Image 1 (tube, rainbow, N blue to C red):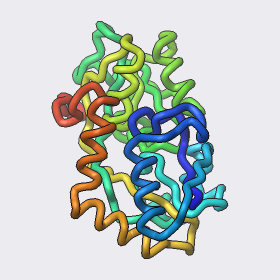
Image 2 (image 1 turned 45 degrees about the vertical axis):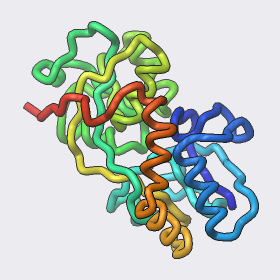
Image 3 (image 1 turned 90 degrees about the vertical axis):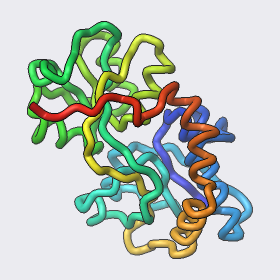
Image 4 (image 1 turned 90 degrees about the horizontal axis):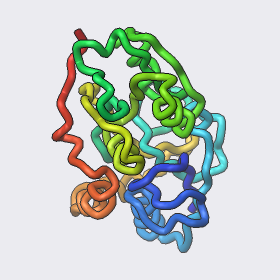
Length: 229
């Protein structure tokens, strides 16, 4: 089974290159799906997130990359049933003074292809800067180019823990859910059934406990929920 993702994604895919990954929530999820489908091996491919959600790559069986299900993306790829709930988190430098009340006066950043881009542009309406990928997004924050990064709460919690220089100070409830994607027109019934079984038998809960909790360094539900003012 060929599975595509976007690295790095600590907790979800533990490793920096496809060949180095042997654990993580989505890696183990992919391995479990392959086993349930009677497939003997998993080949991991690292691709651009923007290309993935835009349907510009199709040499894979399934993609798992913390992908929020949206109607726009569903025009060019097929989604699985949801397997994880996610909000948009606010990542800042420690002691930055960024708050729910002053966020609109700050320079906010997201990276291309993510649902955070239309959120900060059209809903929050702060000063916006867009980066090409997660690495440049985080570097822009660490170097002081921007005041806050916007990305899924679970993902930015992991980044804050990894750097030791950042904090997740808030999150916005967006009702987003992660789904696996398949090349358009190739929806895999067996994979969907496998995901449903993992949700029902507690496999996904155990994967979250084993990999996401330690990677996040905190419970996403404990992050204060902000509202747009």
